[in-house]
Image 1 (cartoon, rainbow, N blue to C red):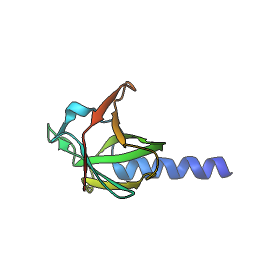
Image 2: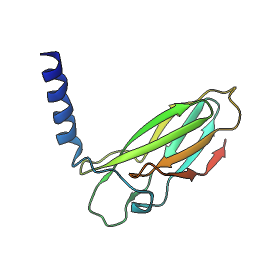
Image 3: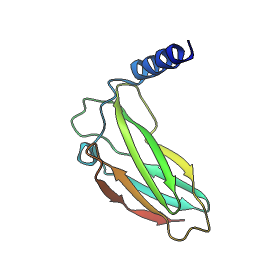
Length: 112
């Protein structure tokens, strides 16, 4: 019963956000950037170059001083910025975009 409920919720979420296709670095314009202010890292995402989607639904995973960001296409209007907290004592923060094939592309970070 619990599995059925979770599966149903996942399908509803996917339907609301669009097709769920992973977004590649070269599909966004401008390419993503990040800005760091204290413990907050704000990631600025681009929009689809072809105009086929409204935006990118992002996800981030923080591992020590590294932040891995990925996203999926959506037909819904979404914010092009999102923030995550990062450890302030882990050294310089590095941010990477995770491509659909799991390779990574560095995202430039500015400090504020």
